[in-house]
Length: 151
Image (cartoon, rainbow, N blue to C red; front, top):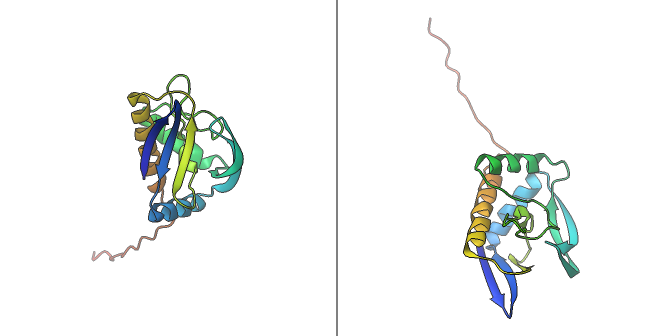
């Protein structure tokens, strides 16, 4: 995954690029975790002409797990697909993880400016989100061989 900030003519955007393998792995994991596909046209507080597909945790189970992992690591964050990408206090919105475009490319308009600390905080928090998400076991088998006691 590549995360890039681009500022052109005072208009900023975050560009995210996933490899085809990453798209497949993330979509599979989202579905295995029970997240459902939904759409919005108010992505990160930016009204859009077309709808954007995102994954949503309707049971809030995975969201609670992820929140706990991030708080244990000392991170402040927002997880709201309709809230700004970075709020007025410089806290990143991790809901980016729920956007997995089919073609692997995503461009998110950003209001205002980013400084290096905000961009670094967003990228580091997203790394932890993806690591936590991909480390969740959705299927596993363990085989034990019992050896009888020779007493």
